[in-house]
Image (cartoon, rainbow, N blue to C red; front, side, top):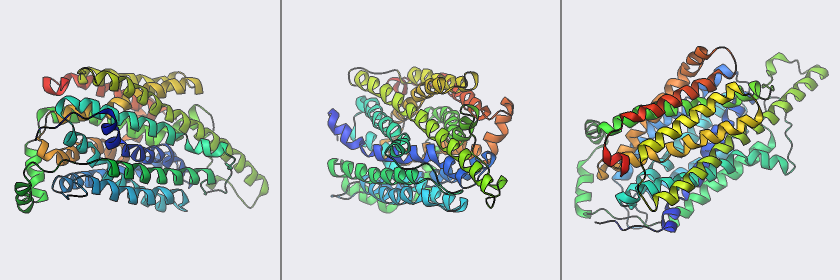
Length: 452
């Protein structure tokens, strides 16, 4: 069946659910480390507490990809049932995670949250390839990135916005402030509503041959399909995997370590260690409260600055959206220069430690983020079997989660030592990793993947 070209609003509607998905990811990425620190985690413990996120992605995405490839319902379609199920679970986890009373509870909610977001997210990538003809795929993935940028910027600033509405930053030791809880509640609602919007406004194409599809569904099994998918993995997919490895190592380092690194190095307001205070002594409790308020304010500033990478990725995607709607883009070189720009942004944090330059850093990082969310998927979709798109997108996720697992299991802490003992060392590691990722784009040589 030949796919017709879709108009802007049709592509917008089918991608709108990513607004909610990114609300989830932005709140998770910007504030989970803060919640962990509030509950007593030291900076060295934080990457290991994040292990839930990549592990759930490694397990969930290939399975969901396989299931969605082999799902068809005349009313609900192929990918939409997974959007909705993931949205319900994600909204539940987002609402309750800031109410965690202990580290193990917060880490458990992170498992639930990341698994649920992955259930919704993976089919969205496959939906673009399902619905759009080859010549519109760059356009489709870039438009997704535009919506993701909007979600990142708004969600990253939610706690700051709620605090400006009059909710207090103050909270007892080991308790997440009320305004952060409200921000997560808003994020949960946005997640569910945006997914519902896509489900209600988007129709999916049925399989080309429904009877053949039903026959293959009976014959196929997950492990057989997984083996075939591994064996048919294209060289372009493997090369993209190398780029993804260094890219996502960098961003995992940022998500897990930016708050402890930047509140300390840039704002000189590290999280106070509640174990060092005797709360039966009024003066020590008062000292803790002052230090904690400074930390919460600094963490808000870090969160707002991180939101700028969503804003610049949005601007980047908007420009690319207009260009890609009229002409083919060179995906390889766009991705290369965007990743290098983000790497430079991270390095600036260590060279010029001030809030003003921090904003510039995250604006540059946003160029990388905008490209990471679009260019690799556009290149991948041009080099894999469309009938296995969900599974291949799920397998491609391995190149995202494996570097994060390595980072969480000590890679960040160990490799950061190469850049000294300063609190900013993890950000310098992230910058170096992103520049390496950019240079690895020279590996991509397939013309169809580069230009679509």
